[in-house]
Length: 462
Image (cartoon, rainbow, N blue to C red; front, side, top):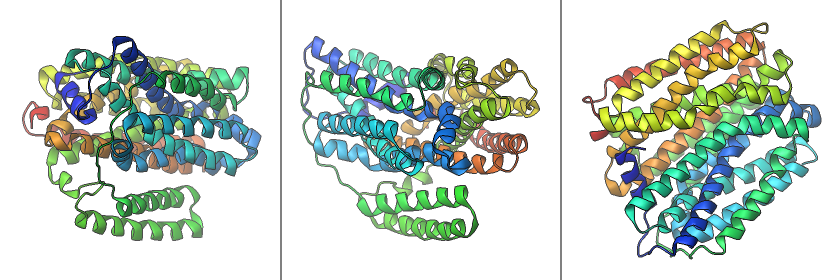
């Protein structure tokens, strides 16, 4: 993690008037925060490999499987715009405990779901809870360490926990689905949630801070995104009606945000070119990475006939290198500025996506696993410097807000990508998969060119 990233993350999570507790208590708090962040990241990736098993058990077809993923991602993404403020208002420790409790109970509901609608509903609750856990866990880790150097190391460990969880998700999903059942991918959250709550007993209570909430903006954002996703997934007459609702809600959202004194998405942020480019690049990366993990989880099992465990292992080469690449990207951004690793990363991802175009049902799964690596490395090389560039492009007091906008945009883009690509592969898997690859490559090519035009060799000092 670069110096700029560490400084900005510190500002993002900072809380007033809090002193560092004893070393033992700090370690327990860090462990709780790291596990909480890892848990919500794990649930974003562990489900993909289990989708064919869920479909066989509960039915629902392709659209149902898309909703199993997107119900979580949409709630997570949309509500993340406001949950940072909620965490400040109730206190990070209380928000984290509440989010973890709800997430754990929702996980149990997912594992016990008797049908697909019940599973999708429980996934929505999981996503709401995850949106609370993420900012609260970071704030909790920050308050546990008064010394800046120790705090920087703690935040780096917290971030690494999320990267490891994303990497292990497909493998863990394959192992649990094969050895137990698809329900095991949700039941495994229960002991982890209980452990987090036990660790929180020793964590100091966080003070409450006044923070404005933009409820009208938040509600219209949720309606617009949900309706748009419904339109893409379901199509037909209902899809067109949902699209109309999405347009109306989006217009209402823009009008509200333009007039709100404390909007969830300050539209003026996007007048800054660096902010606009980094949000676009982050969204393109999420479309390529998360959507194609969804597509290839189904490809390995439904097209090539592999088991859930084999499908999970196919992702290990690409996910296993993500954390290492993230660290290298941070160092490159610190030395050369954000523009170079952003452009190189997106270019590498485009090349990787084009290489995968040659994959079909007869391609060796080992070769497919290796061909996925360049795309994943390119995405991993892009994200840390674009985050640093965005946070350096806004005033320090708006760093937390800007980070929330960026992360929400990335999650939303991933959800919409899954909706769109799922619709494409339902009409012919390999042809739809190849069209998905071309669309992802085109998006990254455009944002790569925009990144190249960022001012100066060191966009992170914009």
